[in-house]
Length: 94
Ligand SMILES: [Zn+2]
Image 1: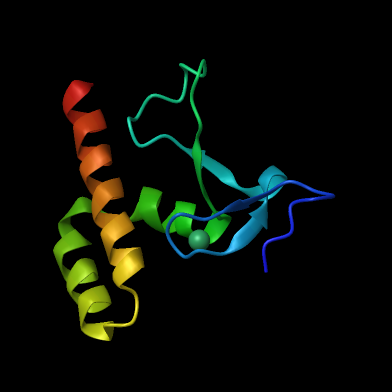
Image 2 (image 1 turned 135 degrees about the vertical axis):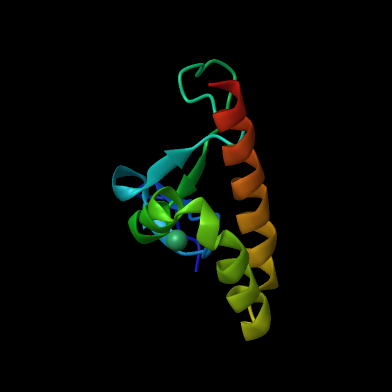
């Protein structure tokens, strides 16, 4: 259960795990991690962050299809799509 009283925990936006902020990775859906003012970052746990960052673009369709077939993680899929789209925006601006 949520208990943020004595240490800061954040919720991984991909898998929903509560992880200590110190071991989470910040994720900015706008792809701009350097403008920090008046912003709240979302967070990913380490394993989800690694999946997102190292997943080759060419496998995304298959990956999403797998997740969809599993059927039990609609929330994950929803968030994952948002992340992928944000990543695409970021790359197109580089
Ligand atoms: Zn996670």
